[in-house]
Length: 349
Image 1 (tube, rainbow, N blue to C red):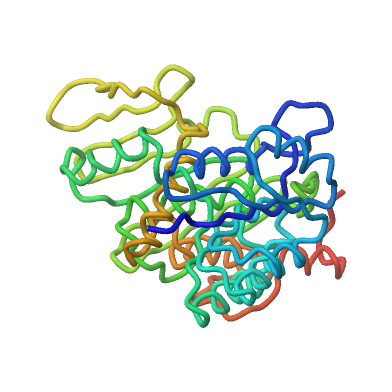
Image 2 (cartoon, rainbow, N blue to C red):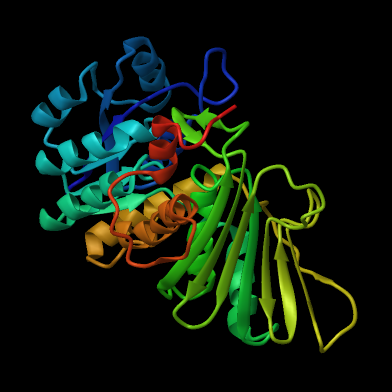
């Protein structure tokens, strides 16, 4: 089997290095490709060639480009990783698809607007390109063990998924994705949302709310509740509420997973060898997308699944804009949050 030729757009710097503005996700992607015997990093593109050279010293890559368009035109790549800020995702993904690559692995969130996110997926689907979005929590041990407990029926039928994080867009895309993961990828019916924009801030170039709420109803009758912002005492990161008990994920720094049910007294702590965040999950996602490309199956991090989560983000913002419930599918093109800010309907101060 021929080795898959990999190109990376956006080398950046590893997290915690001087001048770093992110989490060094390109390095995490690279370690995934390095773990595969079937892939080789052959080219790197970054507007800062010093970053590309530093990345090359650590991970290889025969040729460097300041212009990703030039890399796409010259390198005959099989896979491209897009590790840039969200406003660059759509043009880069679409350019890679139009250049004829076979697979694209893009960082999350998908894009700053719903229209851009949808077009990324549409262009890739039309050209037969496998598009994946790095919702790597799907490969995390605490989440997988929680899903196994749920499927085993330890809390009975699932009724509600509660989640808490910093914001609906940048972090919330993970937790919305996990709602679908736990609920068997069941489609959502509608969303009601509200936001507090005052005190919000940009994250990787995209403004996010100070606080937010989103209530989701899924087609099987399960509800999802997302609360964002600084909410002391809210509880675990994710809570799965069933008819006969509760599973909690991310309880504290020591307890990553526990459950309680009507069959026994007290919380049952489930040992895990890793926490909720870790680079190994990114590596597993890369290995999965390579195997999916080779076998023709749907990858775990497919664009189809990512769009479900992304739709909930913008539906929550749209609900805040229209002050009412939003039935799905979502038909808007913009980000209601960004539009309201631009039009002066809401304020960041």
